[in-house]
Length: 255
Image (tube, rainbow, N blue to C red; front, side, top):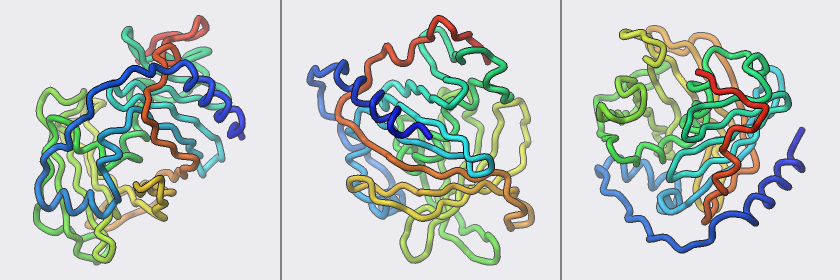
């Protein structure tokens, strides 16, 4: 486990962070149904105005840990695992100490994958994303109030991905996300389901402690694909210094 190490890195970085004042961001206008969802997750203005975010994530299948450092305005992300680090700078996405150290299919796809999943519904307040209520969806025999997020063509590398947020009928919070992945070229991908469990209060905002990914067939979850848990989340008023996102000498750029 690297919690003590992460804390030392975090506060070392903060000492060198830019302390210049910046204008306060305006709260975006959203649909009434989306605002109701956001309000159920706490004071979401704190997300809009935060400059950085850090947290740790554990893959429950093999108990490996990754520590994340994110500048929210630029969406620069660095993650440190026990045997590799991944980041993104102006040149591209990099991995250190080698491509083989990561071992996954795509570094570029992976580097912000869990950040976006973990930060839904807040990240759907980004410019170019529209959230609106659609017809209820059935999942495991339950009819869920459903909101759909759609992206403009210039949003990211996969604007054709589909996202449906299924809301818990009692709390109004996100309980399931149904989503597709077109990043790898499949124009008609099947849906997957992601369950949001055990929400925890992080300074007025609620984030799930556990995310569980499932296959999705015939309006039902079918077999666990992965499970991750989160801890030590911090939202910060100042961004991390850009130097932490730069490729180290031992790193290589890779897709």
